[in-house]
Image (cartoon, rainbow, N blue to C red; front, side, top):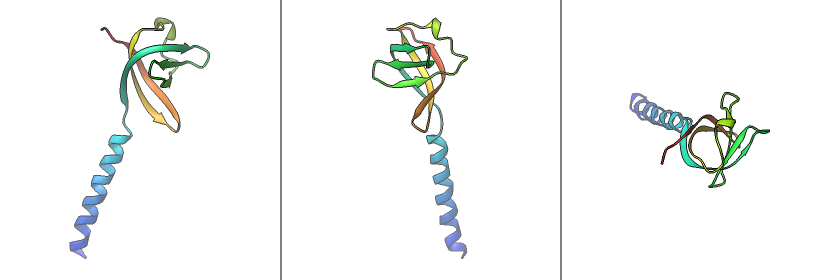
Length: 88
């Protein structure tokens, strides 16, 4: 029994660590292709769309601006937690 317990516990620990890493926020750099103020979302030039929280002031950004989006995927929606301008 003891010889089986250690490999099982190790496998579970490694598996849960992988899930925790996958659930974390991601940061993506890109150029704004469009801003939808009604839906409060931003689409980047690669076609990816991010739903912005109400705390992000979309008026401060413009089409063509380079930005970094911090986001998490919730179901089929890319929910952003931050949007910042990037120089360069």
